[in-house]
Figure 1 (cartoon, rainbow, N blue to C red):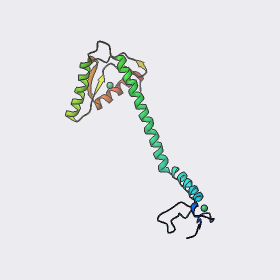
Figure 2: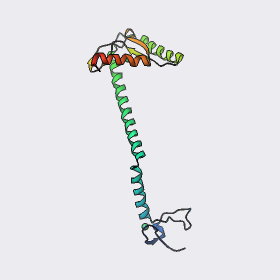
Figure 3: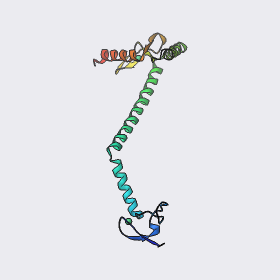
Figure 4: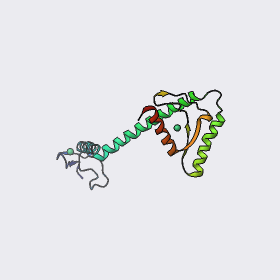
Length: 159
Ligand SMILES: [Zn+2]
Ligand SMILES: [Zn+2]
């Protein structure tokens, strides 16, 4: 075994230690020298990142992240609204029972049921002081709920 090896990329004769080890290779070293291997890898990675499916995947990932952040923000805002809209005299047990009943209906019928505020709390950039109390709550199916909110939106924003 010689101490040097010819790089099949740059054609330079280099010391064996200037090649990465490769068990499967006959002489136990890669065909490209370390410098050439690194360059080839970085070029391959660059090409890889620019492939359409990679770009698409990256974009989808960004969008998902954005959506998740939006959802978190929205939920935080909603929690705050619920807190503000709950008067001190609210019957918290009665409110909770309505949410439980919606869950129960969902389980029994297999159709998603949700709790809706008849008078909106804070929505559509207008301030509505609908309260988070049991008399302002009603149970709708998910579909009915979506339709109800569409109606509300139309009523208050015209679109
Ligand atoms: Zn080389
Ligand atoms: Zn609603």
